[in-house]
Amino acid sequence: MSAPQASLGALGRFALFLWDCGVATLRHGLPWSEVLGESYRIGVRALPILLVITFFLGTTLAVQGYNAFQPLGGSRLVGMFVALAGVREMAPIIAASMVAAKAGTEMASQIGVMRIREQIDALEVMAVHPLAWLVAPRLLGILFVLPALTTISIFVVLAAAFLTSVYQLNVSPEIFIEFVRQGLKPEDLLWGQLKAMAFGIIICTVSCYQGYTCTGGPEGVGAATNRAVVISAVLCVALNYLLSRLMFT
Amino acid sequence: LTETLAIAGRVGLFAGQVLLRALTPPWFLPELARQVWTTCARCMGPVLAVTLPFGMVISLQGLQIFDLFGAQRLLSSLVSVAVLRELAPVLASVLVAAQGGSSVAAELGAMRIKEEIDATEVMAVDSLRYHVLPRIFGLTLSTPMLGLAGAGAGLFGGWLSAVLIEGEPSGVFLANLWALTTPMDLWAGVIKTLCFGFTIGIIAAYNGYHTTGGASGVGRAVNDTVVYACLVFFVENYFLTSALFGAAGT
Image 1 (cartoon, rainbow over the protein chains, first blue to last red):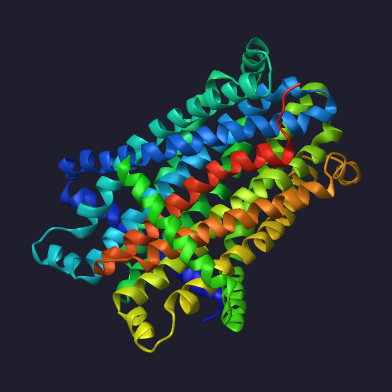
Image 2 (cartoon, rainbow over the protein chains, first blue to last red):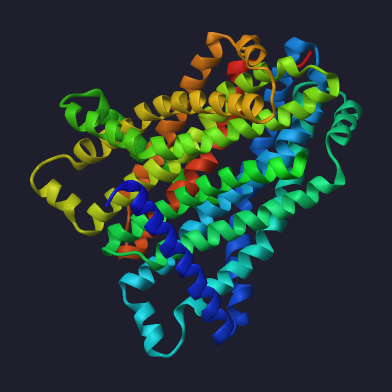
């Protein structure tokens, strides 16, 4: 089978998987008790790492923005650079890739391990539909949690950039805030939430699919986990361009 | 906190053991070349697929800033600065951590739990030297190459978005492309990616080499690798950026 045929086949299987998940969830109901647990697992466990990464993202953005505009005599524009690059693009995408790296890989490896240990077959034997039980709560959890994580990242990025600009780069605080306000509109926060939801859907469905279709023992789980994070990162970045194009022009 | 410090210490000791072996022969150079090649082949697709749309996004948002001042001709200068200095090294490293680092952790983890590493030791082959060292340096050497390829893709993405989609004149874009960048920016990117690649290699090898607990252990090793490698090199990135580009305020 040639490469385009193989990737079309994979796409088709993925679409069927989504369809099965939807049908199973409608028919068997959503295990609400699981949703809260998944939200906790996705959100709270990713938070400390996300805080550190977004803090250093903000500091780096401020330093880079300052240096990039310095030859143009516009180093005061650092506030606007941080607002546009950080709030609109980097914060949502970094939050999404961290959740893909932490929660997405965890979903893929948990479900993959259940698959190769035949626990998924055991669920079916107990008349629990595995797709309704495994996928739907994770999807709902990530939809609740990722927008919240994105909002937190946006504020951490801004705060870190503010601290760096004022204390390391000696930009006056009033000017920084003034340019941030010029660069941002209140809608930008809303767009950030929408982006986060779209990324969340991609991360969750891709990771669950990779785990669910995992074969071949321990290496299989490793490979599925690996594919989960790479494919969701690539899809998120590609989708990000389309969303930015629609939202900001 | 003590737990974190203890882990940092163990990773440090592991890195020390590996580096000591790197100083003395025998080096398994064919194995190293094979690792560089596999890492590049594995990561090239994802790296290009991520840096290209990101270049497009930078161009899209940059146009918004410069539209305010009517300075659209500076767009390509901003794109090349952003891509060369920051985006290509960081995004390439994220993808190397996600693809190359995690497969190194998965391979070593699977070898550990199948007792293949013990078998190597029984045959009096030093497993750190034969299995771990080429993988770490494979990642270290291939990350800069992937970073450069990613920079090319990012610039091309910026051009694509500005010229083909937004209709900026191509000549102006190309003429101003190198207005703000110097060869130094390229070298800074290479230095950064070397550091990030080494970090990813050490963390991946540490997690894979110390896998315990069957298939779920391998999954956990892969997970930890991606997360902690990203965490560490984002922190590194700030200090490297400050050091390489000089960050004293005026």
